[in-house]
Image (cartoon, rainbow, N blue to C red):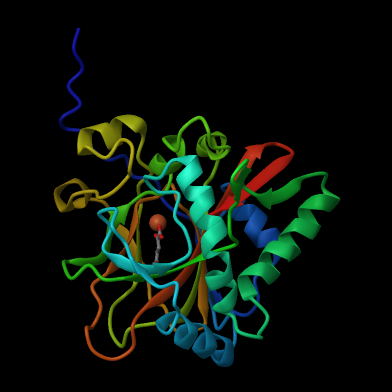
Amino acid sequence: MGTNLAHQTPVISSPTIRERTGSISTAEIISVLKGKITALHIKRAFSAETAEEITSNFVESPGLKERKDGVPGQYVGASHYRNDSTTYFTQSESARPYVDSLFGSLVDPVRALFDALKRDLHKQGIELRLARSKQGQANVCRALSWTDGGTYALEPHDDVAQVLHAGSDFEIPAVASNIVAALNFYPSMAEEGGNLRLWSHKPTVNDRRSEGVETTGYPYSATYLEDVPCHDFELKAGDMGLIDGGFVHGVTKQSANGNRRLVLNSFFGFARPDLVLWWT
Ligand SMILES: O=C(O)CCC(=O)C(=O)O
Ligand SMILES: [Fe+2]
């Protein structure tokens, strides 16, 4: 008996979206981790001074590299995407000084959020820590500047497939059956475009297989997403976003001149009821 998976129709799941100005609370972060909020956009979440410092340090970083894994972009840090555990943790260790240097002598807002969440979860008997192996441990974030010149600066994708298929020598596949939260701080934005677009759809394994993206979650085709509603987060430098990375999302085309769009990205989620892992 054969199952025809060639024409999966995406099931629509309506996201719960919150957008406001101010400070994020640990209670809100936990609501995303537990699937009660799908996406949170906090405007002016960190200062212009911090944003500018990070941006100029990124541009001048001796650790700045071109991605060579099929996702057009430049980065500082390490990505577990399509890497085995040894490669990822070795790269995380060697990139750490460059990631730390992005903040100069200013307080790292990603680390501050990590520490606040760690304190709050600890009170509830839950440990929050960086993913690790014999080779080392993850960094708190990685910095990325997308360079795809097509319809999207970063094509529609989900963040769960890569976690599910990270390999048994990683701790993170356990998170894939829960929410994979994706945290983004935006130190710099293009003049136009570069919106974070979130589609009302959370793909299943069968959906990914039908799109030929079973192990990567990247990229979903325009045809597949044609009838799926979406929401655009219009981001500005200093904003942050926190989303359920299981929903399909991407970054819209951006203006080529002027400021480059820069994101500090990290992932985290429950590996066990008493353990939240954090990685990049
Ligand atoms: O740059 C963004 O706004 C989103 C980044 C993202 O989705 C990713 O790194 O997986
Ligand atoms: Fe993503």
